[in-house]
Length: 273
Image (cartoon, rainbow, N blue to C red; front, side, top):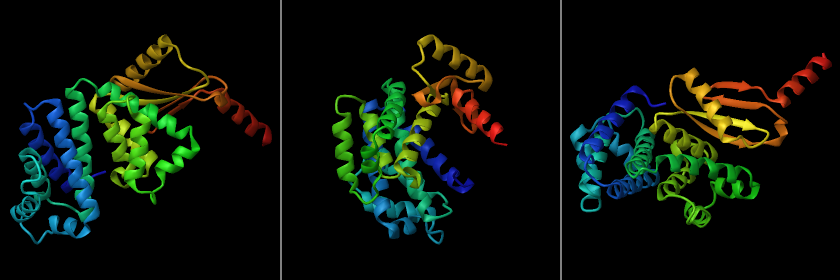
């Protein structure tokens, strides 16, 4: 979670970007997202630059001017103005400006997908890709290996998703490969699914079932959860025959486990006492 000073700096940059990009197309906004993420990669590889851009002994104008001098002619005006606003803010630690830049890039990818009417597709594609990876041990190890070059892992992802996903989904998976917010690949992908759902103003519910739910069953469950949480709920269903029957539902820190497997385990524990 961002510290208060970091949130203020992030909010100022996000507001600046929203105002300046209000009339651009989805494709133009996606290009801005690419540029912001390129800045994040630069910051990731240059710890001295991160320190210089967050140095409290420098004025806000000085830090912004330093950034502009480095990217002059290399970024669009909107991107340069947005990131300059970001670095002009106060930061609790140099690493925080990297996380914020990366988060701003991801949020801009989502904003472009939203403007293009594809945000729901992105949410589903990210979740399904996560399921594919978790179900293939070799693939999970390969994509999660921090010792393997990101470029090589990104090429593998491109091959896997070619013709099967939106450009936004591919971009977000690449962000996960780089370790979004310092997380591992699996946690990064999960966080990005959650951010996508939040962008749609939806609560995210992870459901584990022994068999595929029918459309009617999903609709009833979503409606019941929506009543509980007071907002629309997006279901992410994982089919796992090992639970035998019933459902396990996790919403945030809330877990509702009505599976047969849980009841059997409780019975075993009771008999063992």
